[in-house]
Image (cartoon, rainbow, N blue to C red):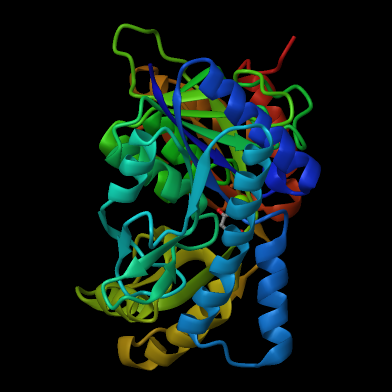
Length: 405
Ligand code: ASP
Ligand code: MG
């Protein structure tokens, strides 16, 4: 008998009919002889609606109150799922994040899990119940209700699976798995049967929208196998697992795209120790997450530093750069929100020469100019004009032999 954690995203519990379909699947999984722990997101776009409501009521949103508001979405889902289960004769009980023993730090709206004490979930399982847990939330060391950041129900599910030593954490969503590229961009994208944690982290970090990055990190750290699949077709989806050293790895598994970032360039920076440190410390102190960084070789003692940030952080990043411009002696600060990033990801590229060359040749053949480059051992990313990103993904998908027949 296996212990299965099933997480249902917003679209999977979007309306009463969907909630009944989910309850039926939970019942089926139980009938097959498994123990099931369920984690639910808020229905449909309910979290966005709550944020809109908050905006309408007040220009300031105290983070503690915002968290209290937003966690209500998941509470609605969990109670409704339990009612639907009751109608099928399946005994269940709902639990908030706090009741499920999810202890977080006090960083409201993006709290981190410090400790898992899922005693009540274990007891419920022992009593033969299906515990249904509200995703995305916990209770802080100050005993306040917190949320884990947007998309945080994935983290709840993985954390519970790790703490309960579940055999698998199934992530149910509105797509049938992880694809070789976004199927809305590349019609010939293929579903991947299996992806390694390392590859999935790179995919999630460079624009793959299926799984929240933090949940993949968490799953890898605790060795929780993930299975991303559809709650509309229920067919087997994509397994995210530890790399299997006996298997031949694909050189390139996926092409990702991301147009959510913008570029900041600090120009004419004196080329001496401490300048970059000062600049990036200032950005970090203001909670601005920097992604790609490129520094040019210095000419006549000065250099340019370019980096990318989320578009939503662009104004704050510009403000901070202007603030330190004088003290670091930089000539100018410019920004560009017309960029996009295309990345190729594959565990096999470590041992396969020529991957970089093929990527650059493919882009150049189609007149796509590369503005920034960054790499990891299993990823190459290029910043290009935003309006060429979709083309770049399609050409690279073909060049690396990923097109479905
Ligand atoms: N309902 C939350 C959100 O929309 C959490 C989640 O869906 O995972 O971000
Ligand atoms: Mg969601």
